[in-house]
Length: 604
Image (cartoon, rainbow, N blue to C red; front, top):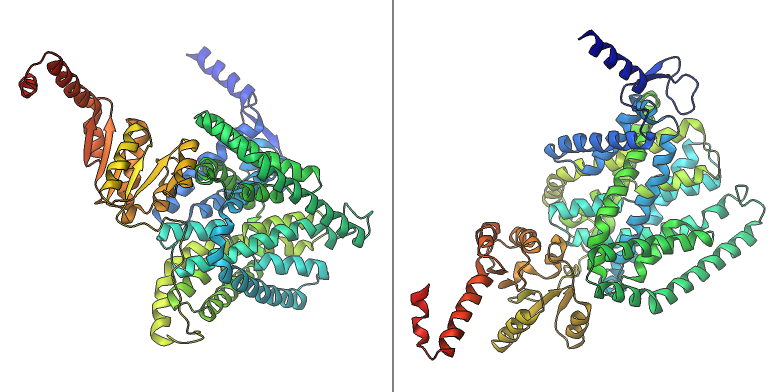
């Protein structure tokens, strides 16, 4: 027993150790020792840090979900906790935060890739009034107020004031869209106004990030004059856009079509990742930003028939790297400094939330929205943006911000993002009170129609998943009865043929929840799965039942043993291939023997 205890003690001395952190850069506090009980010497430091982040994010997020708060808030709080408890240095050393910050750029890159895909020019038409008039008015007013406040209260240069103004005017696309999805109001006028304004903001910030070095000519590119730098940047930007357009027209569609024909999901995922990162790398080679490259890559596939399939594949990448981004934001917050400057942080946060919410709500009223839509749009866009933090971080590489304002600014913008889910829960009380007290205040009377959200304009239709022989037969039979059918399939040749002949068809994975929004499943009178892949059908059944609990669902299964699980998952009718084949074989055999086919039933 004594020997076992001694060996255990020796093992602990070898693998767990103490590390003095006094004097290390990035370590908060001095003159203390961080006990690295969790840092296993045989593992890479980043592995330990990722383990800590993932476990912490899951724990904090579970708690916030019980409180009905956004997961993005949980990511941010997890980063704050890791940075201010000494765990960051204890797990991976002082350079870990820099590594996480570098990886967080991937989160922003994937976000811009998705935004570029969502910016379909055909779908932008109904939003142009909201995007250009609403977006331009919101950006102009907020930037003017923020610039005036920065000039009055802080000792900034005019270039820094411009950066602060732009950072305050931006709103979080990730938070607002996620909240609208959770509330089920993505098709409402308020959510569509918010989407239009964020589209304008995203385009604006992409251009601004490209031109940012011109504001600070004394930075890394200080050797060039401002005029020469402007011409060089614009020339590089135009050349990159031309190259991207050529790729989008002559290369990318053919590559995606070749990959799709392989029917390999792994290869399709790799192709999507290669497309996004490859175009972003091309932008970096031309001295442009990665986010511009990712945005243009998204635009390149925004009109493609593979758009919705790509979005379903990109989702996990975007979610993971966005989690890293928000954790990295929290890692940059020093709670002690924020606590010391709590009054400026609180004032900036409240001013940002109140001013932006009021401005967006008033713009919404001028565009003809009722208070419900105006408040939904205002609260959703009331915070700063993830790009506000990116912009401050990139500008800090080009200019020296006063130390006494950097932390309060970062903390206030991050806090405003964390407050949006809380305020959205109170929004219903605000719009109900406003409808009672001031129903016509600032309202421009005009006809306002609910804007489409990319879903098909069908009603009473059938949705057929799978366009093989069974799917073709079912579609033909329904067409003969005057019932229109929407086809979902992963065969690009079939989808092209159907679309070319005017039939509604979607190249998508039926197990993805957003696919059923696009198909208008709430208005469908039948959903049919004509292929016997139980692994795909089961999650798709749950998705359909979540959107439409009463629609009849017909499914196929190859084996009778899987019929009951499919019925429990939500299937109304289960066609069993074994039974149907058995009946057909018996009928054919009796017919070949010239026996009475009616005797078939006696053998069952």
